[in-house]
Image (cartoon, rainbow, N blue to C red; front, side):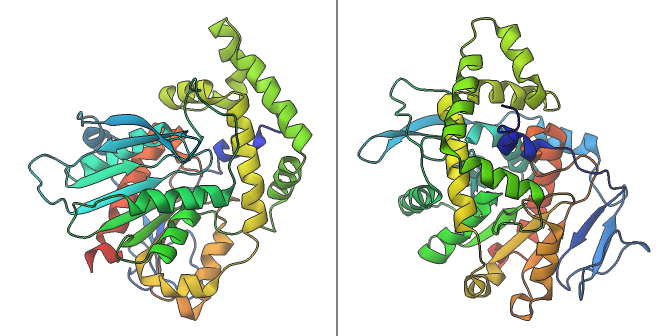
Amino acid sequence: FFSMLATFAARTRPVARIPASTITRGTLLRARCPQPVRMPPRTRSAVRGACATRTKASIADVSSPEVEVTSRVVRVGPRQIPTELITIPSDPSKKAPKYDLVIVPGNPGVPSFYEHYAKTLHNLMDGNVDIEIFGYKGHTTDRYADTTGDWFTLQDQLDHLRQYLKLRNSRSRNGTVLVGHSIGAEMSLDAMDKLGAGVVHGVVGLMPFVLVNTESALQKFLSAMVHITPLVYLVAAIVGFIGALPIPGLKRLAFSPITGTMSASPAELTRRWLRSDSIKNMALMGRTEFDALTALDTSRWKRHKDRTSLLYCPGDHWAPLHQMEDFERMKELRGMETMLESAPGVDHAFVLHDESAELIAQRTKELLETQHAVER
C-alpha cells in the first residue's frame, strides 16, 4: 500500500542538507563568494549566503498581508468535468499590472496546494501582478457530487491547458507568463510552443519534469508500479476506505506517514485529497508521463531558450542536476537561464512546506525580473 503511494510521497522526501544556495544563470552572474557549492561546465556560479538571501523573517513579512483570493470550480468539456481555479488579482490601483502569471501545478494538479506560494509571490511583487492557479481536469481537492471517476492522460491535460489559455484575456502590458512546477513545466513549454508568444510570453519551470530520469532506480520502480492497473485500483480502494473512516483521528493516524513532515495547511489538504478517484487520476496520468517523456525535442527548446527559465534543487530525481548541466553544455541553448536553489529543506515538493514555498516565491520573482523574457 505505502509502496504504491510512493508516487505521491516520493515528491515529499527530504533532501540532503546543503549549507548554502547556488544560483546559476548562464554567463550572467559573477561569483560572489570564494567557494561555490557546485560549478557546472562553462557556467559562472554564485553561492548565496545569509547576507545575500532574504531572511526567513523578511519573507514571512511579505507573505502575511491579506490578499483577495477567489476559488471557483468550473465544468469543462461535454461531460462537464470539474476543474478548480484560484485567482489572486492585482492591486486595484494597478490598471495594467506588470505581470500576468498562470501557475501550472505538478501532478496531482490541485491549485489549493499552491495558494501559500502564490500569495507570497503576489506580495513580494507589491501586488503588481495578476495570478491564476490552473487546475487539472478532474483533479480536485474534494470529491464533488458530479465527479465522474474518470482519469485523464497527460495529453488530455495538455489539451485542457491550451483551451484554457486561449479563452483568457491578459491585462498585463507584458503578456502572460506560465510558472510550471514538475510536469507543469512540460505542460507550460508545450503550450508556449503550440500557442505562440501572442498567448504565452514566457515560461518559468520550477523543478521541471521534462524527461524520464533513466539513472533513477526510484523512477523505474514507480513507472513499473503505475503500469500495473489492478495494483493502482487496489491501492486506490484502500485509500478510499481509509478516507471514508468516520473517526477523524484514525484517518489522521493512518495518513501520518505521508503528511507527517508537511506544514499544517498542506497536510490538511492532503488528507482531504487522498481518496480513490484522486489516486487513480494521479497514478494513471503519471503512467502517461513516463510513456511520453522519453526524449527531448531539442528544436523546441532552441526555439524558446530566450523565453525559458528553469530552477533546480539538489537530490531531485524528477529534475536531476545532471539534466541542468546537460542543458548548460548545449551550445544551441546558451542564453537559457537556470537557477540552482540548494537552501536547507527545499525539495521537489516545496509547496508542502511553507518556508520552502516562501523561498521559491522569492526565487520566482528573481527569475521574472532578471534575464527572463517578460522584461524584453
